[in-house]
Length: 214
Image 1 (tube, rainbow, N blue to C red):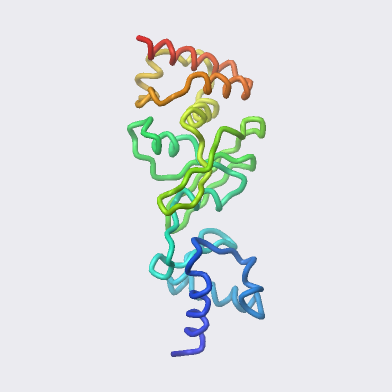
Image 2 (tube, rainbow, N blue to C red):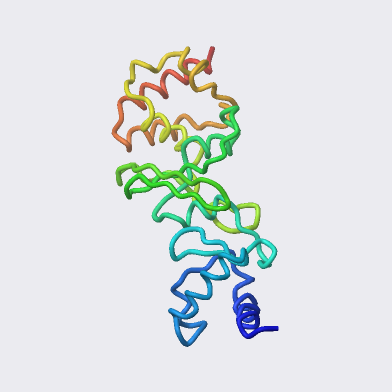
């Protein structure tokens, strides 16, 4: 067994209990941070390590003792951010479509990342609207920030629908194709719309409530 392979086994032993790692730990793991960085790049090419983005890595699934979900990856790729929009709506079963790219919101500029785990899309939202999310456990037991069902819907409308005049029953039935509406808290939605200072969203909440009563 060559010296480089032995170094990898030692590296794997120290990190296989973590879902991901950053270059910030390289100095603590090796005498030379640059040397270890060069080695990690070689292990990426060999498929032992997966680069999520610059400076952020995870061991290959076969080398790790813990799982890593797309939800957790979405949170750590670009911060601050939380999962919302189409991916969150699909996660809650509120739209019929399956969504493969993980959609998130951030106070930073719009961004997109692609890696072995998929596509991760980030849209900018103003700081005053950066709320309404919570930490939920993913399938591996790690906390991930994701919008509540109400906020995911508010975020989607806030960023994707231009005018309040578009909010009518046909929009709800044909364009949104919402399902499992009974899980929505209309009082919470009203508070979100008021906090976001959006007359457009307030109109939608009223329209949706009227549609549900019918």
